[in-house]
Length: 338
Image (cartoon, rainbow, N blue to C red; front, side, top):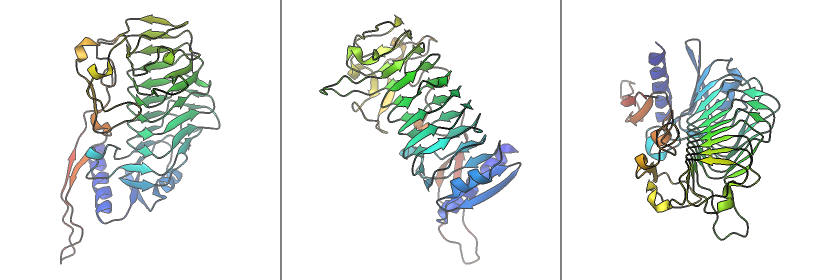
């Protein structure tokens, strides 16, 4: 029954898009309410009750402040997987506030930052999204970032317990962790050759488990900027790092970048046309015997970051009704394995 309602919701959103009206769907207790216009996402969040689900189709949407437990699905952010729907694009950054515990946000692109503010927030998962950066301003617990395109930094602000950062592309760095973070299967691509300063992938990260990642930083000191008491396991480095007061075991060092990926355009930028699968995955195994990097671990990076809800593959719906007032709807939808 739930899958049927979800399919109906997807079709309703797609028909709305075909009719050139923008609608966000709020699903509550078996009923669906549609909200219209650029502020529809904000309206849906305001109207939602804890535990509700919001579906945001492709288009440009004003941000909302999340202060209740919600499940939020967008259409995705990869251009080649959103041709039928368009990218779900939030026009600026937004905040996650107390009351949002156990919220899941998936499949949206944010033109700005995602910030945790004003008090304790726990068990929030941000998955398969694209955003500039995030800052955890106040005490947070068990926040998970997984399978995201993070263009800049994650700043834990020395106030986040049990932070999980897994299978993300990180175009900047991670900073200000006191202890207890799990940082695994990420690709760090922050490097600025020729600059007067040394860039870094980790800054003031302490007491954490850092395993099965790929660090493209060419400077030996790029992971030793105020970092201490971390355990580095089975990571790939393109240089021979200076570990400082950290402990290291099983790492792969001095691996040329040209030998790593199936298709890698270059440094300091994410390209949707690149393929970050390893050329020889069996040569670089992590602590769990899966490959190091984005496509290893328990939950590998999903191809094209397709959200977990049924995905609209094609949409050939007519733009106008026929002489009898009927609208010809021709939509194909594919289920997701995870």
